[in-house]
Image (cartoon, rainbow, N blue to C red; front, side, top):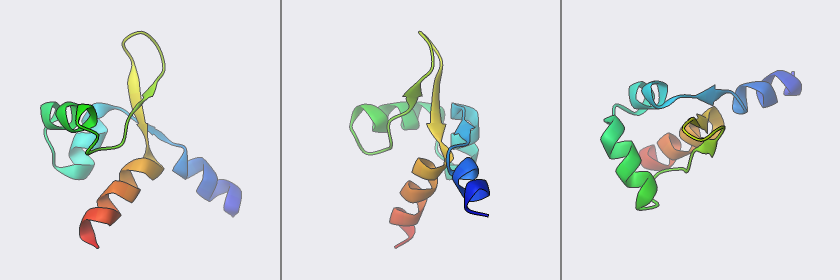
Length: 65
């Protein structure tokens, strides 16, 4: 069971997925990343950035607390 949870935590999301989860606009996400108000993405290539599901969920939980 813990392997399944770890796999979900490490699931990668593109910016469209992150925007849907948080209801933030893509430009807001980019701005807040630059201002260190939002989790930083993982760089997969020169132009591909993704977020770990765990990081986005932790951000959402911190805002609900």
